[in-house]
Length: 162
Image (tube, rainbow, N blue to C red; front, top):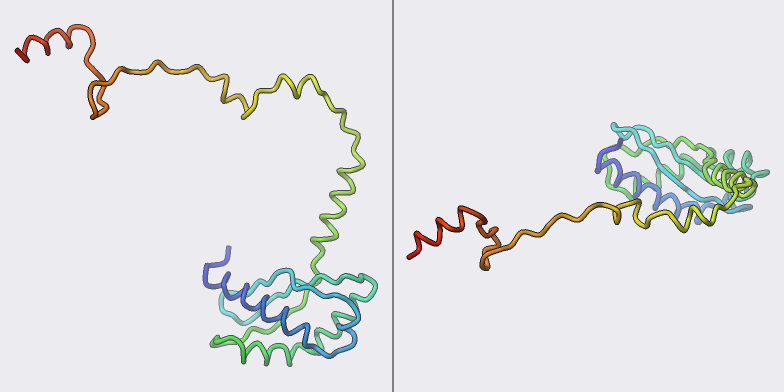
């Protein structure tokens, strides 16, 4: 798990690279929509793995060729915009999480799950918390909220106060 500082640096690199990709003039990258989805930087700030999602999957190889070709310029621009001792080397990786999530949704949509309405009506709200037995309330004496003495202790207290 990255430290808080590395997490902030990852967010800043992601934000700056997203802006820089809009300024990039390479036609291989301009052809389709490209999004920086995540950045993982090593603890020594030498390498940053950039996860990129490409809208048009047929053009992803060309997009990554363009990103690798522009990597030096992008790293130089990052160095100017960020105040880091070392500007990390950019390693481009395709992010498959959006495709994976869409596939999971398709699988869930095709499942034939019978809806048991009777079980849903009988199920307690809140996971059964309402079925717990209630505890008896203790009587309190005065604003301090301490429980009032009961039984023999109450009788002995009354005798002492007089």
